[in-house]
Image 1 (tube, rainbow, N blue to C red):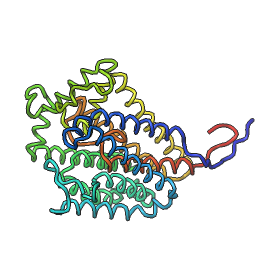
Image 2 (tube, rainbow, N blue to C red):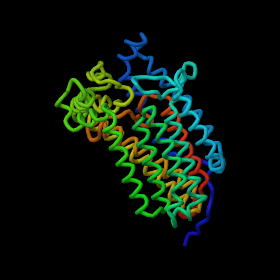
Image 3 (cartoon, one colour):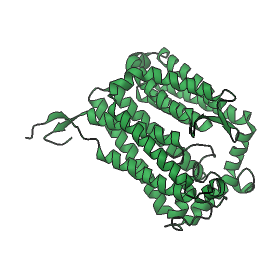
Image 4 (cartoon, rainbow, N blue to C red):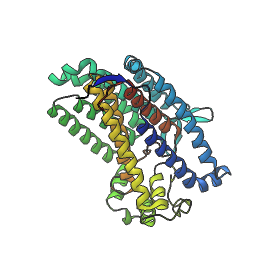
Length: 379
């Protein structure tokens, strides 16, 4: 019989690194193609967005390396301060003259030549805070409804600030991640179900309260009823995906990116990728995300088995954020869900999203490195 001994690896998980690099490479290629005509028209340089995204990639890589160097305990101890800072940023972006308003949404803080989107930072900060709270008050959470009071109160404040921008997509991801973590931590199903029901009812009220959201819902039901009005984005996205057929029209040969499909390099970059690489290329991207999320969950399970609850909840939270954004973004592009502004992790154009995604992946890499492995007989 082979004897098993516990060891701590000094090498990062190459599977996670390869998956992250592969998705980032797809993003750079997709943005280079989807943004060429946009860059030529608005900046006089077809490679403007590609070069800028390359710069974001370098910043994200640097941030990821710094995050990887920090011990897990640093993130646990500092989690309340990250949430406090993220909340301050959400308040700051709503101040007229400070926050930048684009297309009716005040979501960006100008930082010289760059911009910061606080809603992306909030996803990470809320995840870290809830993971720490579940470790400190997990027993109360599992035994009494009062254990839910504090995280839900904080979530209500954060959700209100996000909706004030408005950023409905980020609100859905943050709420879904928190509820998912509460359920994983063992909160009573009846309490979680009640909270989900209340959240859904609130979202329905928000849809009816805002005419533009109601128009999006109507367009989602039948985008072809008004293909040049409220259904324009979705119909153009569906045309792009349909044109791709099995193997696509070839990189750089998209027609829909020629100002037919708005936001081709951000919210609808998956549609352009599907048009140029076809069903096979779209399936490759989905497969990469499935593999990434599966690997992150495996790391979380290993952390839980070794008694590191904070690390486990962080991994589960990251998997919820990534899988939620992928589901919403691709679902929106394919007509499965109503259209809303939400990036595709590692692939959509956007420095804040890329930076936060890189930090989240770096946290999982750090956790995986510090979990003891069984030597001599496999894992």
